[in-house]
Length: 386
Image (cartoon, rainbow, N blue to C red):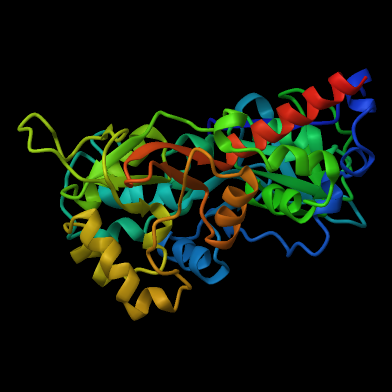
């Protein structure tokens, strides 16, 4: 049997506390299952799928991550923890989800890595790299090493607690055949699953803006809520695409701001820099490369990230992939959180850059930051009203 060192974590509702019991009814009564209404069937790939096939799946379904499915009994997760899909009638296990693969995993593999791919920077063997099975790259980035499940009966507030810790997505079992208990030995089994993401939660909160308690929170500025992350890791306009990908993998980032470089000889365009106080001129994201044909990718890896973003905005390849115009999605310290959430949802981004009135970087607000701040304020408001 093949051993894949994966971690599976399960979050189930905790016993109701006095503070959670006094939450505003509308939010208190919402469960994860309510957010699953209308959600499409899980998009997945088999463990034997090539990276080329996996990328095509990401592009066709406009997603940035997919779970990888394998036959039962062939893979062992860390601690024996497993997420299974089973027959609804007989309970017979049909497949085992062994990990998650993101666009960043694929790009990190393409770009090369000293430990993963022998350290070569050559881009002439992309076809060969894209022909390997997807199971071989699980865990190139940290996110793929953990699978999370969320019980449909989990409250929206408990769900927000999970996503406020940086978990981007979780599988939600439908008609689970297992008792939902915590622990690494848990084996989850259900006839089907749906994917719940941080963006789904933000959309839900945005749609519930009429909730008085929520409205009082997200109408405040990002400065007042303390939601701005001032640790800004950036690249310069000179950084090549291949180097940007390596930097993002090392720092576990799916996107980075592109800022004006300095004239200092000590500034290395191959490394991330502190972007705070630098002029923002662009954004480079792993999702930018989803619609890229391999022949074009071979050429574009050697371009600067800034040049690449300009290509993205004009190439028909990317227009066909629904890539929006390359406008900078920004806000200011005094911007209401509701406005920032609106920008994240409508522009399909997972972080909004915070700039001053001259366009210089101040920080960023991520979906993780938004969810964490809203939940903390909801819990605090509940305690105050007790």
